[in-house]
Amino acid sequence: MPILSLALVVMFFALISLKEKQATRPNIVIIYADDMGYGDLNCQNPNSKIPTPNLNKLAAEGMRFTDAHSSSGICSPSRFALLTGTYHWRRQHDIVDAFGPPFFKDTDITLPQILKTKGYNTACIGKWHLGWEWAFKESLTQEEKLKGRKHKIYRHNEIDWEKPIKGGPLDRGFDYYFGTGTINFPPYTWIENDRILETPTEDLNDKNIGYKTKEGEWEFRPGPKVKDWNPYKVLPTITKKSLEWLNKQKKEQPFFLYFALPSPHAPIIPNDEFDGKSQAGAYGDFIFQTDWVIGQVLNTLKQKGIEENTIVIFSSDNGTESYAWTRAGKYGHFSMGNFRGLKRDVWEGGHRVPFIVKWPGHVKKNTISNEVISQIDIMATLASITGIQMPKNAAPDSYDITPVIKKMKYKSPLREATIHNTYSSTWGIRKGDWLYINDSTGGHRALPKSFESLTGYKNFNTKGLLFNMVKDPAQHVNLYEENPEKIKEMEGLIRKYRESSFSVRR
Image 1 (cartoon, rainbow, N blue to C red):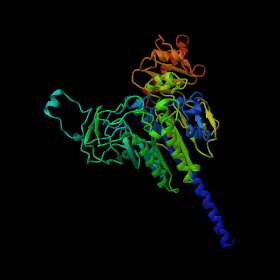
Image 2 (spheres, rainbow, N blue to C red):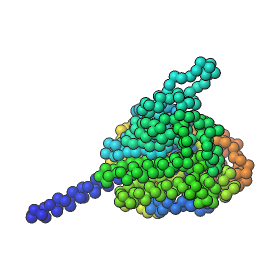
Image 3 (cartoon, rainbow, N blue to C red):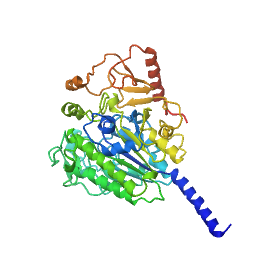
Image 4 (tube, helix red, strand yellow):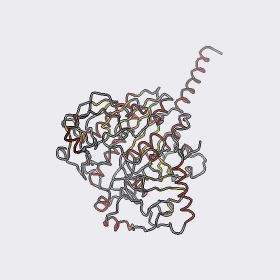
């Protein structure tokens, strides 16, 4: 064979090898909204008053799930579950408070950690809300000690800002972090990697914010802040940082970006250029801005020429906040869609969330799946796609949903069952068509009378609740008393999962 021909053959097979290598190491972008309801997306709520053109396009280019769930109805637990493939309640139920310790244990195995074993460059940009190990000073006065003030509210002079902040994203497998931690929690300053960029010199309280929200309350926790901190700059800044980070990535090294948005969580503060872009008030405008941000990320992937080899996953950490009740009456926009309940609830609206997957060439365009999935399934799925053999103690509750997204043959339902839980008092479990809740309500608080009249919801007086979610996804018809054997089965399965350290056998 001539030398030139031989060289061409070698080059040909080298290109094939490179393509195969890239195919098993796609770039991964997870965009995680904060408090976005299922019905906020225009593509899955025909009565939505909010345009979401970029999310609509993402759904048209990938697969949209109609029955996807977060582990919890609140922030920190859902984030822990997504990043570990573990139900949050195996660790704790509550959020991490301002300056609270890490949700993680050092023995936890995280999604970025396993991806790094395949050579991924990893970044978390935006909301963390999973705790750090802060360097506190012993600065309580004798008067404060006598009054018993506990270190739940810290002042700017009670923390050593010069020391690196341990226990955060860099200790959980991320190579890079940039964000504010949590938009409505102190410290109100930028954090890059494990360092504060500007030392807080003041303390925020509800009288010195200096700005007005466009809907609802500030909901800021008191604590240290830098001078002239402007919350309206948070979303634009992390958007800019995400695009900068993406543009620095090289085609020969796969990357994982966990872009955790602070929106549309309160404070509801769309930037001025987005005012009036929806028919659902300032919250609708904030959703529109969030959609615009997502569009900027998608456009960057396309402009860099890496769109075809990138998996994009979009979801939200839980359902929408209680401002949605007023919004429904005022604007006719139901952020929870046709589902009952909101953030914090075990009702469906508390944890049934938007979920879209785009992976060109692997996920068929404009497809819809009604399969019951959970965000905890992301870890096993991405491990499967990238060829990672996970340790036995990793992702104990995570199912590989690759057969679903690739439209392969599989036995449905894929998950044996899915636990729904926020706080320790109330538990729900979904198995097939059936949903059982071990209480007379799935709500964390009573419905306003005005919202009851809009939806026709009524209270129940049975010891527990049972719904057929295929026939009655809005949870109007309680079948508890007619199905004692089903109740017994579901209670036993909740007990089995809680007593075991895993819910998936591998």
